[in-house]
Image 1: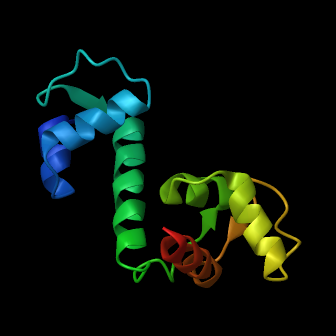
Image 2: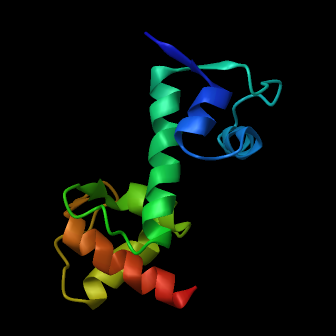
Image 3: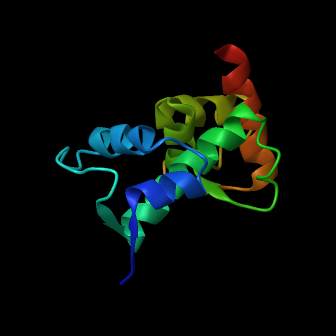
Amino acid sequence: MGKIRINELARELELKSNVVLEYLAELGIPDDRSRSSALDDELADNVRKHFRFKDQAKNGGANSQAGKIRVNELARELEVQSRAVLDYLAQIGIPDKGSHSSVLDGELADKVREHFIAKS
């Protein structure tokens, strides 16, 4: 399994290292890490997903058309409860996505993003 330093990952994501360190603290990762600490591939991929989804949400989800996302991951990205996403899906007539682990296509995910971004 490979490793990447936090400062290298931050540079890749065009962020400051302290932003990545703050997110790691939110995940419950010990805060004794520094920007030169290394992350394993799995944790680095989780950090990449978090910040890329957050960036897509800010930009209206322009790059997400090709991808699929689970309801719970989309809720985390939008910083809302999964139940709120499921309720919105039912409201717009998509009741078959009743599970937090249901997969949404990119177009539907973008519609949900637009709804929750407009509300904020």
